[in-house]
Amino acid sequence: MTRKALGAIYSPMASIAQPFRLAHLSDPHLSPLPAAAALQLLSKRITGLMSWNFRRKHIHITRALEAVCADIKRGGFDHIAVTGDVANIALPGEFD
Image 1: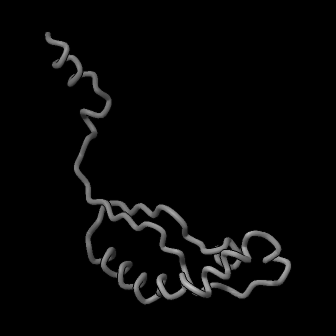
Image 2: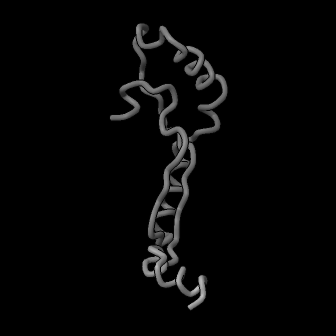
């Protein structure tokens, strides 16, 4: 028996490898941003909040994310991978 044939027989993935459809959602930055107490901003969150208010809130629009999620629901995907930033400045309210 050849080495190639042995690899096919003993490969742990050979018997389970199946094609699947994957939806990949990267950096959703869920919005809107909840209100922050002053003490919560005494870190680098203040620069994140400034970036959000002056630039990113115009990019990360809730309607756009809702449309992407609706497309994913209709797409018949086997798996969904969400990678990157889910929150904006990591306030506790962003994870509720």
